[in-house]
Length: 277
Picture 1: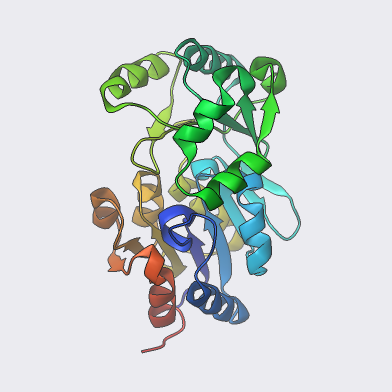
Picture 2: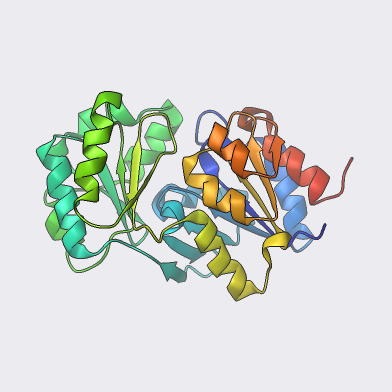
């Protein structure tokens, strides 16, 4: 098997359980792959501002697929290679819908994460904290605005991230969001809701990136754990769901590897990309 690109979800996959640090064994295996000429791509639901620190610290990441596939960034040059977003009118409608329900959310646009202060920053912090380390990353890199509609005006948005939705409210909220126009809704944690264009998908974005690079699906290794990874896991010829992953992720992937907190990424890379026993 000849692997030319490795695509990595972050939360629940590449990162440890603190959602902020990469296990040393993962770093070592991926660095070895990079040194052999294999391209390394982060494929995350996050915006670039919430990915940049990890990418820079690792030092060998070539590309970032962002916002569930709504954007692709060349990490080394800073060039945006691809964007697929929701139009300004629909973005405005979703902002008003969420604000009317007093639901805290963030919006991704051009690599930045924006939060409307009117939705309650403290409420958002309480809903978003999956670990103190991740909370620090999230709220230090977020841009706050007193007028979300004005801030986002004049351009599309790649993604809405609703921090927490109560189970009994989810169905009604999904219906209300769908009424604003075509959307895709997914989750990367047990209770959040991620809203993008229906054309935004990690697998579709990887196909665009690999098309530019002359890489086939069979030459791609991908790792993921959640609902927003299904397209990527299905598309890549050598894909792994984490042992801690969802049932959907395990069904979409070709193989299962160890859990994120035990460097399951490294286990797959060592065996199938580096040829180690």
